[in-house]
Image (cartoon, rainbow, N blue to C red; front, side):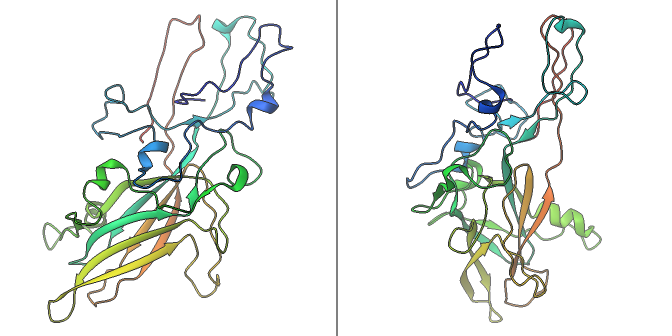
Amino acid sequence: MANESTELGTAKEDGASGTTLQAFKVLTAGAVLEDSEGQSADKISGGAYTGEGDLTGGTYTGLVMSGTAVKGSSEEIHLASPASLELEATLTRIVARIDICLNKKKLTLKKAVLKTTAKKAYIFPQSTTAAPDNALLTDYPLLPVSKYAELLGDGKPGIAYQNPASDTEAEEVTRDRNTLKHVFYLYEQVNAEGSCATVEVTYTLPDAKGVEQTGVLEIPFRKTTVEDNGAYVNVQRNHLYTVELGDGSHDGKVTARIVVQDWEPNEIHEFLPGDDSEEVTEPEP
């Protein structure tokens, strides 16, 4: 486990007391969303991240991650000689992430909030993605991380679509420039009617006469194709969800969809006490 600031359990040398592995695996993260107004996704992302790669400065503590070290196929490991013991554990972020892609010229994103999102999370994966106690934030929406909360909201400037730098600019380059990364973080949850995580955006777009019009879209975690009949998509840890606003066309309509993909893995390498060498690779937030 990494970056969890709350003490979650104790281990005793005798191996017969303290927190059992079974109990440890159903513990919940210390960061819990509250039913309060003006709450930012910073609360479950480890704090405000500068984006400059400095994970030691300020109050940023990093995303909580978990994993289980194994020796062979066994999770029961005896540390008789830790200096000579080699173990491998894949650490997985316990949160998911939402990016927003602006895919229509002249579109300006004015506001974005996340509604009906899970308040709590298990440290380790469970048999389903259901939130602990099915606790959802329903009274108030969650605001973006502070980087975007300063730009998006009532009376704020918003973020406008950026045109290609040249006629020959590759489509993927333009798309990347117009993708707002790390807008929200969210915990796992099962999505269903009446309890579905939903991104609500407010945007402006000029009409055919050049008059700016304002629109509001609610984008739930559901499939959009006719074949899938609007099936709900559960939120999974360590997944990246990109909300795409617009289909690249030049008409006055703004459609939306959610693109799902695994979050790119990042590894942390740590050596047990007693080994003089150490290698640490911090994950991208």
